[in-house]
Length: 400
Image (cartoon, rainbow, N blue to C red):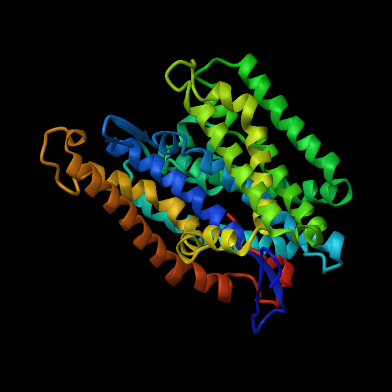
């Protein structure tokens, strides 16, 4: 086993590397997002008091939307990693057909299932509204309009951003394979230019929506791609476990400091967090860059901590967990499950804990069932495409 890598052997494909620390990072991302959305409904206190001392962790759930940024970074890494190996190690070049198939088989079935279920039970004012909502969601362009962005499922906006990046990825990948630093710099410049333009030219009510369009996240995708290239190029130099562990800890410390810097002005900064996001998203992407590269070469104890079986399991079900957790949390809250003992459930600490545990547990159970009964069989046996033997580089990760 190489530092940061495990080798998995399949009877169908040759040996391929699996970067185990990405499992931990993906699990951290989904935990952050789930914690945010359930906290928004439960208002559960995020502190404890002991002998006059208060220990608070409120900044974790209140800035949990940063988990989406981490997902985008991981996606950029996973998408480009096979191509980085082709450039630097001479592995087979993944085909465009294979790339499209892997993205479709991973994203579409679970998404279609969720859309079908939610559209069937959602109340729509008119037939025209039903067609409009369904059409924009099936085309993954629902985030382009405010009246469709957060309707069927509040988390679907980020899947639209993700799929839109899939569409432009082949062109970006072509540039990255030739001039990775130049391509990365252009993606960062585009993201920064977009965010500063939106911040200066559009009213505050439109800013959050426009900042969450694809151009505003290109630095996360691009930095993930750069991390894949750097990890492949620097792999022999990462055989310094203690140095890499220290850098990984420093990367997480930087992530924590950026999170704290975001959290502090939440009540004083007008239109928070837009102003912070305009300037700091690229710094956050660079923190993810350091965490990923350093963790891949870190001491075994660090990698075991970051890629332990529980986090690996959450990583496996993370896509369906992302799709369903807010739906389940809202259903439980709206139907008073569990039943609170006070008129306002937020005044019942027992209900708050019961609700949080039930929302988390129910989401995990539902997502695991969909993943192992529905999604993974399709990943294994295929969808509508004639089944073919996929190159190992196309199967590095099932991605975000």
